[in-house]
Image 1 (cartoon, rainbow, N blue to C red):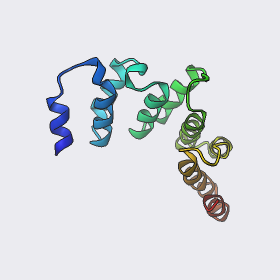
Image 2 (tube, rainbow, N blue to C red):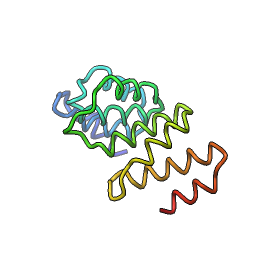
Image 3 (cartoon, helix red, strand yellow):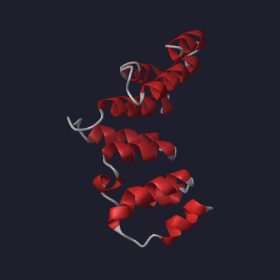
Length: 139
């Protein structure tokens, strides 16, 4: 696969950490992703939100949530992305009500609105309210 060859051909360079992370995620190389997350500062990987997103993608919502909780909200981050990530973490951890509250706050027009609505639908369906989930997803 081309992505694997690109990853193998890249010389070790801290400036390529975000690219390495993206490739490892695309290839579902969870051990490599975890290694990068453990050994690379968040800023080199795209910031706190990118790291939390990576933890979610490899099935570690508790790590993503812990990271989001310990890093205060900053004015320079994408608040819609943060809400979506926090909601996705809560949903993955089984906290459907908390997830729904966070996901419902992602504003229309945001890059994360569609993802938030899909996750909100999932939260309502998991809570035994599939009709409400379908209604929310259609908006």
